[in-house]
Image (cartoon, rainbow, N blue to C red; front, side, top):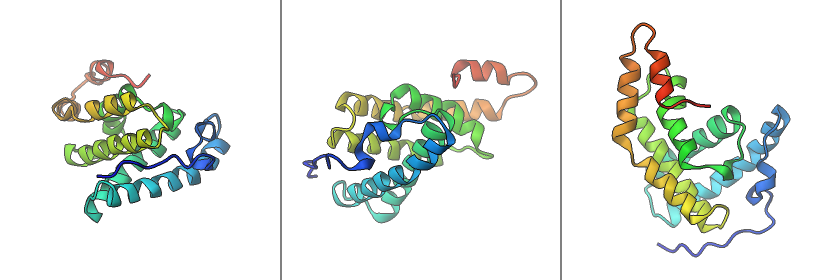
Length: 170
């Protein structure tokens, strides 16, 4: 693995300021920037991490879902402010609530992709290495996320409030 990538510098899709979300117009402006960054990330998965194309595509799609649907659309947060707390809210609550049939296999690929995305951002010096490490550690808590999915599917009566309180979105 050759992780000697250099930040592009003035590239618009590598600028923290360009990912500030405050309105629908911001979301529309950010979308193509994020897509460009994700295309580069996909190439990183293929070339630097040498993942097979199916795995690389699945991980890039998982990171896309986390970044665009959760961070930007749901949380209205800058993608470079990603953290283990955001990842936990995504995996242990938002993903489960947002999908008709949440399942651990699908979620696990999203978690791998998101962890590798922040690893890529750390290599480019867009986030701190410590942040990427914390996100990666949170992404490996598969037993917890499996338990959250199972307990969600087993909710009866007014049990949702207690389930949600364990890992609230806000």
